[in-house]
Each structure stands twice: as C-alpha cells, then as structure tokens.
Length: 442
Ligand code: JFZ
Image 1: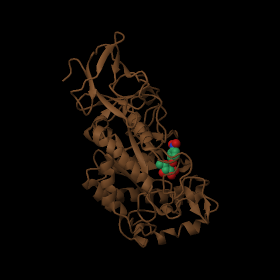
Image 2 (image 1 turned 45 degrees about the vertical axis):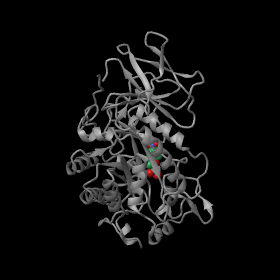
Image 3 (image 1 turned 135 degrees about the vertical axis):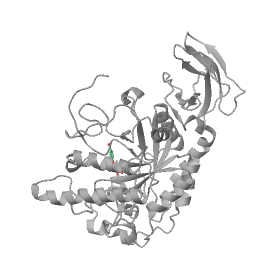
Image 4 (image 1 turned 180 degrees about the horizontal axis):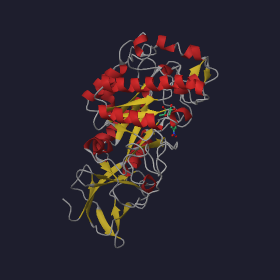
C-alpha cells in the first residue's frame, strides 16, 4: 500500500489491524453496553422547571444552570437502588459481551474513590466505590469491562481547553500529571480492565500534547498487556486526530462512529471500529423527559446487525437515574434485544463481514469461528424470496432457518452467481435469520 511520507514520532505505531488474541476477543464482541452515570443523573436534563435543550450529561454547561449549584449536587448523590449485579445480569441477558462505564465525565466527578481529588463518590452520601462494584459484577458475569474517561475535566483548576499564555502552562502541567495519575490509579485499582474509551480529547490544549499523550498511552499499555485504546485518545505532533498526517489510524480501533454507522465497509479501510448509540436522540446521561424520536428495539437490532455486517461492534447506551435505576424504556429494549439474541446471537457473536454484495432485504454476517454465513432479514420482500449473489468461486449448497436446519429453503438460480432463495412464509414481526452453506464447506 502506498503511504504518504510525513516523518512522525507520535503518529500511528502500527499499520493495519492488531492480530493478537485480546483484540480478536474485542472484534468478536458484536454487542456492548455503554453506561453514562454521574451527578447529572440528579437533574436529569431539567433545572428550575426548564428543560435543557442539549444532552443531559452536559447540563452544567447551560447558562440556566449555576455552576456552583451543579458542583454541590454530589452531596445529594445517593443512589440507594443501585445494584451492580442487577445491571450486570440485565446486560448479560441482553447479549452484551463488554461494558463501558463513565468513570469520569466532563464534569470531573469520579465514580471511584480517586485519591487525587475530593470530587469523588467517596465524598458523596453514597460513599461506596461504584466503578469497583461494576467491575466485579460484570466480570463475574463474563462481561469485559472498559473504562470511559474524559480528558476534559471542568472541576480541575488546571484544566483549560486552550492555553492562552505561558502563564497558564504550570497549571496545565499540573492537570496533565493529575490526568496521568488518575489513569494509572484506575488500572492499578481495576486490573481486570480490558481497555480505555477516551473522550473529551478535542480541545486545542490536549491536541498539542502529542508527546505526553503518546508516552502516557505507552505507560498504560505496559500496565495491562493487550490493553485496548481507540483512536480518540491522542493527536499526532501535527495536531491530527484519529488519523495521523499519513492517514494511518492511531489506536486500536476507529472511535469516530458516534450515533452513526458507515455507509459501507469500504469507507473503513480495513480498520476495526465501534459504533456507540443512544436510544433517544443525543442523550447519554439520564434525561427524565426524552423528546423526539426514540428508537424501537427492532431499529436498534437492525443497527447492531448493520454494524456487525461491516465488521464493527455496536455499543448501546444506558443512562440510569439518580437513584440507580435503569429506566423502563431501556429495560424493555434490553429484554427485546436479549430475546432475539438468545435465538439468533450465533449470527452476531464472533461474526463479521461476509464478503457478499449487500442486498436490499437485509444483511449478511459470517462467523469467524465456524465460517458459516448468515442472512438476517430486516425487510421481508414482497417477491417471496431473497436475492443472493455469491463470489465467483462459490456455489450455495443450502440455506435454512437458523432454528430449523432440516427445513432448507428452495434455491433457484437466476444467473451464474445469482440465486433466488424462496421463503416459505412471511415473517414480519421479528428479524429472521437463515444460515447459508456453500458447497464444499463443512
Ligand atoms: C461525547 C460527550 O461529549 C458526550 O457527552 C458523550 O459522553 C459521548 C459518548 O461523547 O460526545 C461526542 C464526542 C464525539 C463526537 C460526538 C459527540 N463525534 O466525534 O462526533
């Protein structure tokens, strides 16, 4: 492959995908759970009877929200209903294989008892270590835990988005050390951590820290072998984010797919990626009043399938309330997804791109372990059948419902590489999955 040739010390340190076992585990998750939880769950997007028009976890940035009042909210944070095991069981039932928890969002409030600031859970009435409980409960359910960490920290005196003059440098240096100390502390305290999901890294002040961030990344990676860090952590020394001056991705997977899904696999250039998705519009933290379009379980399932069909992971966000309850709308979707996953999860977990031309009835996935190809039908055609175009060296042996291997569908050839796979009956209330086997396989 041709490569631009900007000499960089802090650009990508690897070309192409990671091939180690930990990264293969990551690639095979398919479905993950994101949890945004912090003191912003108390106002829940509302203040003094007014609704904040932005994302609930950003409410501190609103003119209507007096900052000193927000900064006192932790004194009321007492989620007496919080039960880490209950959340972990629900995630497991949904079919999630990994979980991301906001250890610290932009407001700076720490869900773990950090010794580097007083603004932590330890000084709330709740006191107990929420990150620790979640790490334990999810790990016990066999769900891998990843720590979300915001570089933006509105609570730290040294933090700023821009360094306006040299006078500000000492304060920012202190903030950098604080950031490093907290990250080292997190990996020390929770060695089960599989990776870090960074956020709030777009500020000019942070973008200018290419060398510091690169060194810090190396230090963190040395603490946990196989640690996974996405492309939203550090910039190169020319200020490029995600992709360095040569166009090479920095980090282990592309982390820019935020509430959006690539149009096709080609735009990904072979990189690993995850899509993080909210159920309502742009709301990550708890908002007591969801407005606008709220995605249905089937919409979310289709998104999950689309991501996996293009070799990505789909991470669904939950925003628990101030008492520690997962809201009914989220519980309902988790249950619906779980019900479908229980029957069809074989077409999601350990699966990725199938190498077939997309068809308008739905999506293909392919198991990286068994090599089986799956047809996931999201739009049942009025024609009564599914069109399939196979690669030139392939011939279909049979296609059958995932649940009924003995009920092969009728195959009709319509071209040298084209088939019409006749469906027996219409299935419109859930996404049907079929298995395709090629001649000469298995
Ligand atoms: C960030 C946060 O500001 C937000 O509160 C939430 O935590 C989300 C997961 O991450 O928001 C972003 C960050 C990046 C993009 C969009 C929203 N982006 O790259 O398009």
